[in-house]
Length: 168
Image (cartoon, rainbow, N blue to C red):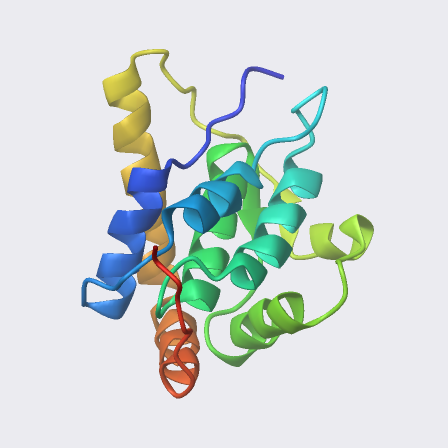
């Protein structure tokens, strides 16, 4: 397998702005930790395992004042799709239920987590950093379009109980 493509802190800042339509306070160290959940220890080539960790740990780290569950879901789907898998969840209730179960449940069993994805032929990724940034942004925009209802519900659910941040 070729090298994996990852989302950056800046990608998640942009994603949170797009999803919540507001600039929110965030805790940088928690955001950086949440983004690093994409990486595997040792052999960082286990897309499903790394994505499961991102989906599960991102909402627990809650780096943003709002939009953490929606960011976790969108980032996870974009990450797997950038790396040769396709999310098979339907928009709306199925995606919301899946995302909320990950955000509030026990650490996911990777085999069950993989059930939401299927292998697909991925487009060849260039090594030019500008091309990769374009691919990441395109993947995030695609996820936001395909899962608009689910992401809106996740943002609205979290808006009812915003996160208290210590941004010192």
